[in-house]
Image (cartoon, rainbow, N blue to C red; front, top):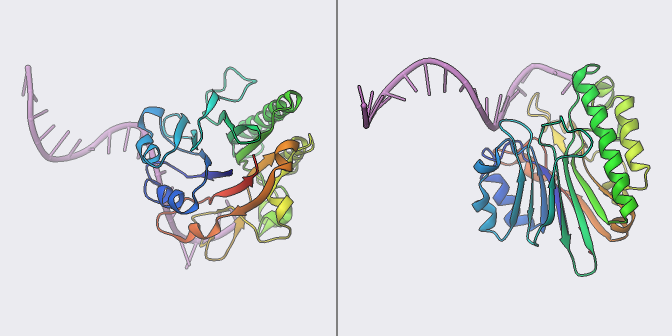
Length: 260
DNA sequence: ATGACCGCGCGACGCGGA
């Protein structure tokens, strides 16, 4: 089962590039972030015509997550537990049933957190603690799961082309990386690092300052696997080249193949 | 990060109905 995460930076702006990539890459499941659309305005037909089931959790202008799946999506839940006052659309879960196992899909768009310090940074860290609690709850249930999305976290210096430039940024500051490690250290596997080592692997390049042409990227889109899901891992890749196409998102897809 | 962007909603604007 090929499962991808992709921050598309606006579904309307990606109405051509996203279907093109789907037709080529043929993922079974896609966790989308930054749809920047309310549910009613999401162009479901684009995906239903290609055989995908569609579940969205949108809001006006900002954020918004969705799941596309060739398999039926069951027990869909919207929003990250732990704060009833949080009205930002950043989290969605659903279950797919494979040949051997049921798999919980957790799609997330973790807050950027800049400027730091400040209220946006406090929100990021609080959100990460809620995500840790959710991962711990799923582990306690022994539900195999994939927690994937735009984490807005550069885990290590090797995950940035110019790490010194990010030292005081909310994506790379020590408390951010500690909060990320606290989630991983529950027993989750960073799928990409289970398959690939070394520097130079990125999932985001800023639109500004020729970042793509200079390969000034960062790796911030991650798929964290529960132990049972990690045992099913057969591949993990970054579809880097689509960043160079017409009207690209500033992120590219990252995907795993799981023998579910 | 940075020389270099992008997407969105809003409002302006044009249009049609009162």
